[in-house]
Length: 484
Image (tube, rainbow, N blue to C red; front, side, top):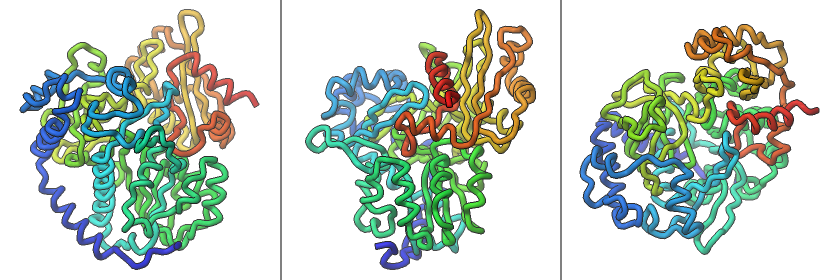
């Protein structure tokens, strides 16, 4: 069926109005305390909970004193890998039914992220909040008069043990769509299962009922590829995007959107649904405070220290770059996500995603962060496509090599000057001679897609790595992108 049985908008609008009223009354500190206490009670009997004395923890400070920060590798090595694929009462009660396969953009290694039934429900409810804020800003919208198109990777899931499956997060989401909502969802199973990205796009372009699509969701880079092949979407009211920065794609996607179509940013991760834009573009993303995640924030310059400061919503400050740390209903506790954020307001807590903890260039002590890298490039070449940058060593010194999709020339000197203006460490190392002038290689549009295709990483949850800090991996990328 290519059209929903009836317009469910009036029902959803009423539910959305009630939810937004609840969110506007929510006390951030009290809500996060409740979430943490609930998570600790649920996990107290697990091996992790017993090892860390969850039953005796009654404050945020006590929790932080008992549970150290861990990254994915530490969790995998200490708590998940010994029992994989059947995680029973390891870090969350019961058996974990799903693993989301996440391909790290910097390390290149596949991660196996536990997804519990509780997390599925939390993600679903956070997804509803996206629509609730849309209705709050556009009360006349009729998004449930048509189809919601979720563009993701293959929804095929591999059964790795009885009752345990793994695959793309979009596949897990598709498997868990409530039956009552499936008639409002697109694409159907036979198209969603397709693993070959090029064949999938061709099939979607030929079979999508364009006049019925009211909502479109996905990663901007892959949405652009889809929109270039789809017929016009005249009734599209809402485009939901997340996963990579929006700025490089905004102007290229805009011509495909009909008048009045809203774009709304979300901050999803395989580990949980973190934040949603509740207002205008650029105003920040509102933390999902009561959706199964307790948040901590570590000042970026302290990450890696023995006893870093661990903030939460009661103590965060605006204007500070933080590394995001999650405690979730999927059995992650003080888990260093790998993303960096900066708060723009505290009440309610709203943030901007500024990059990845690994999206830094500091091979020569320059300490360039992801947000600075992107801002500098877009300021001198606003129409660029995909790009990546990494270090190249030349004896005791070296330089940054930029590979950028652009049809026009790119002024490397202007890029250099902008980076120096944005980052004092960069300027100091350029002036001191440790860091040589950047080198820019301009590539034709589509070159990065060809490179990703050659690696079997086109589409789905795969993303072009903006920074490749490992010189060996970067050299391989340069060879793959320039040898034609």
